[in-house]
Length: 346
Image 1 (cartoon, helix red, strand yellow):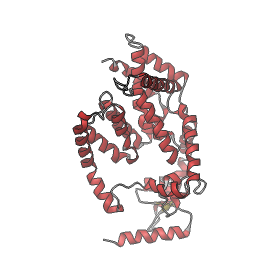
Image 2 (image 1 turned 45 degrees about the vertical axis):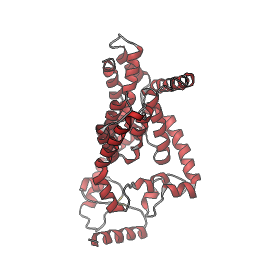
Image 3 (image 1 turned 180 degrees about the vertical axis):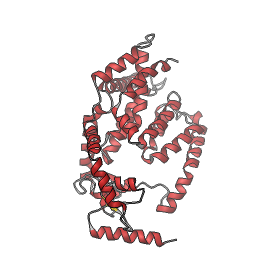
Image 4 (image 1 turned 135 degrees about the vertical axis):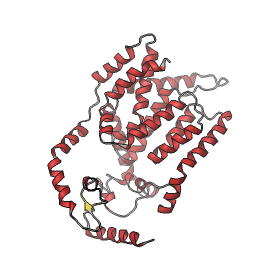
């Protein structure tokens, strides 16, 4: 009931976030992913042992974003779910999780020869490095396995990771108000102090919800520093960050019904999240509408067996498959041959 009093503050923090508005307008997969993660979080917030429903939700999460499969496991462990009495629940959740994934696993195995496959694992980490500037790694046909890059040519990747961590830390205020970051850091510092002071006979206290949220945020920053430097990847935590901040404010001011919401409104007003790059891109897209329409029309009557396009607008508007133009005739010919071979095979 006390947590429910934080709903107005939660809605203020969520509704005032410009990145959330962008995500909804542009139909980002992060929106539904965030809702699934939020459901998993609320179910295991106070008891880390998963159950069958958690297995279903974890399966849906994995289908949406394979790269986030580890997040619920981390939460369940940090919330104390590894106690011996909970192993049956873990096993049942795992079986259900696997059952949800089975059709996808069978299809992926037949299509790629691997039960779990992600194209990004063969290219995304190499994107925008010294060897593969900008998106050039996606405009050619040579796979770049992550493990191979780490073992054979780690320096460009490590430089990218350093840039990524710097980016996320520098731009974190564009994702959430800075006071929220302060609240999380205080909670994490408090958890460290409590663990050091805990009596070994009594056992170390579990990491609190805000502390677990901070650990997850740090892990996501590190993960995407390897792959893609965009705040949109942190959106999956936004409902949880907003909820736990609202709960914190409610517990800090018990008996004051509207104080948490007022403080949340003060946070977003005094520390607004700015997205200058996103805002300018949206404005440019509106300005470019006539040019975009003309470009789409130029492709409408093309009869090429393989349609090479400069961006995703054309296949989207024409409802026709397209391939990103690699800018290299040899690569184009290789793509045509591969697609022809695929169409000819049974």
